[in-house]
Length: 252
Image 1 (spheres, rainbow, N blue to C red):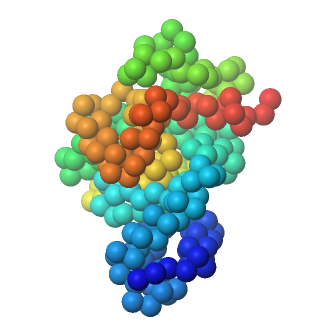
Image 2 (tube, one colour):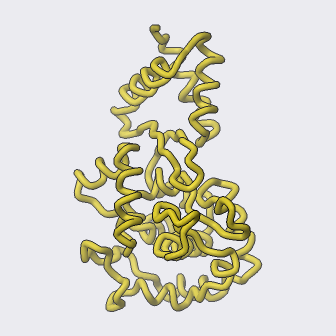
């Protein structure tokens, strides 16, 4: 079954407008545009869309979220741009430490190392000043598993913002991160939070730079390899830290 260029354009426009959708929603969208389109046509569409985006270094990716086992689709932009443009500096710092805390947690959903989680209470009451100091040069947590230095350690201004980030701020930011699919409620564990599908799609290099358990690392590498995320990052030999947000987007 052939696809018209207008099908690719309409699909991409809808995906960019929504930014993020489940694969079931993406397939339903295609069937609205092309009656009788099956899974083969859907995969053909993704290939053709990605070929048309290659010149701009953009890509449509899918990932099976290890937490809810639902496959998601997203048109990726700069790995850091969406977090950076939608959240304030202190919210981004909080998000960074939340991701680190969850990713390195030994509390798993249904005993699955691919789905670490943390309680909302833990995340609301994190000692952000201590978390900020842990990423400064000289700290045992300053470098990732490869030994590379964190490219942007917290400044005095950053630490001040973290100290002023109230519990009420954390509660609201956590709710927003869940609503935006950066984080997700933990299945069958009330008041617990896991990483969301967008974090796996857009912050893969940062996740794999953390001091993960070997079981979690193996599970996530498999998820990201299937999505074509980790393979491209590792072959490029790059490591991206969410701390780059302060260097790339913060204001004095």
